[in-house]
Length: 442
Ligand code: SAH
Image 1: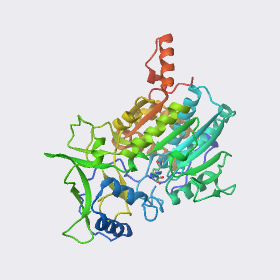
Image 2 (image 1 turned 90 degrees about the vertical axis):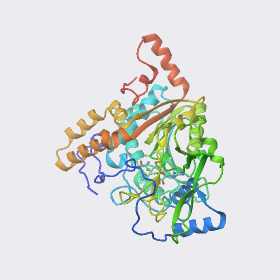
Image 3 (image 1 turned 30 degrees about the vertical axis):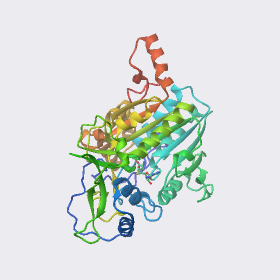
Image 4 (image 1 turned 45 degrees about the vertical axis):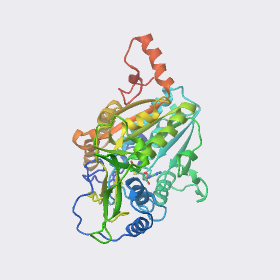
């Protein structure tokens, strides 16, 4: 970990970030066909072999769910997989500017929708808590703007290990945490800046109310079903035990139709698709909540707009990893299909995007923010870190074009824009929402 010197206070200072490895999860595709030097029999592999022997081959979705979030042995449950020493790196871990600009986005939406007297900030899959920490630092810095607003933070996290790291980062345990493993709110506390914070395993347990939702690199870890087009129609890809090699798994095709086929569009032209029903359930819940009580959701992830085929891949130690080898030791992920998210929101709320990360961050003023931090810093290593982080986030060949931003907003938010547009004869509706066009304080 490169520890950066603080060259100022609050919003103006550079905050410590890990040195940047060159691989991030959005980078390559993998069909699970890379040669594997060895295939250690992990506890998860033993568990899956037992399961398949007892009840037959499992879907890719069931495989992902077991490998990633099985409460006893899941990859996410007991480890810190993020950063230099882990398996992959994410934008908030690369640069503080990322979270700061997202903080500005929420304040901009809060202001544009009438400055409610209270809101909840809800993050799905908060990792180490770095992103929400950067957002809260912006909220503190803009305390004069938010001074009459009651803010609370709600984190949806299945990982025991990561929730402990989040708690330490965000609260520094200045006030002892309340813990209750059996309750839907399994942990409660107060952040460093005095904001109430709570942890949940499921979104549906988060109190309903005016909320801003955030999901960064969350939807890509939700389980996908994979389908291959055959002369007999769509056939689902399953995972079975390889009869040729002991303790090895392999992909097989189902002999007949399976229920998840219902998630494939009737006019689908690709010959291989991945569908993610869990993503649909979460988008429906977010849409209903936003339609009912207001707020917005910001989703950022790598993905496509209904065009890609085989994107299921694994990462271990910043390298691609065969998805069927040593399950439980590597991250599994699949690109997010934003066209599906949009369909699931339709009729309930409006959606914007997906737009590329470099466009979104540019519109949010990343260049100005970088300049402020560079001007404030005399330390060459800090300046280098800031420039490297900027390049990683913005370079179209790096994260700039692989990552996308997508937002859900109440219909009235954009309809309000229509009235204003007619009155002023200005730009289209999306121009009123920061990030999707240039940030303008209203
Ligand atoms: N948003 C963070 C971390 C991304 S990794 C960042 O960008 O740095 C994915 C996160 O989602 C982890 O915190 C993981 O524990 C959490 N997660 C994975 N599956 C989940 C599920 N089904 N419900 C809630 N959290 C989940």
